[in-house]
Image (tube, rainbow, N blue to C red; front, side, top):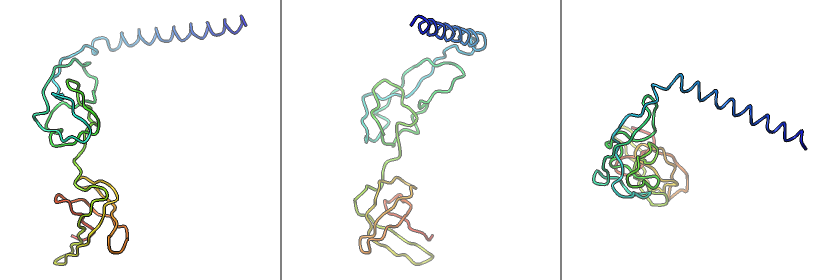
Length: 166
């Protein structure tokens, strides 16, 4: 039992020495570069919930301190966020993570829409039911209502599905 405790104490002592060495090396190498700088980031003025479309009125700016020279994963400019949909809850006054929003869905799973095949002067349309949600430019699978066949197409700005052609 005593031998086990001595081995455990020795292991913790080695780990502590390594941690101290790493801290000392970090302070010697990056002490000057680790100074915090002030940045102004867009933040929600009030809590934004998943599925809410983000508008300019929903955002405000707030000053934060970040480590100089280190990248951060927060939105720095409000322009790319406006018009997008929140993927998760965005808390008021907190920075907005880069992955917390997405393009709004133009196609809703299970809601019938039109699929178009366009080649030259020929246009063929069919009623389809999307099998997944889709935003502009996304490739989405849909089931043809008449034949039951599953097709793939690209979501267009008007909410239709473009299948092949063009």
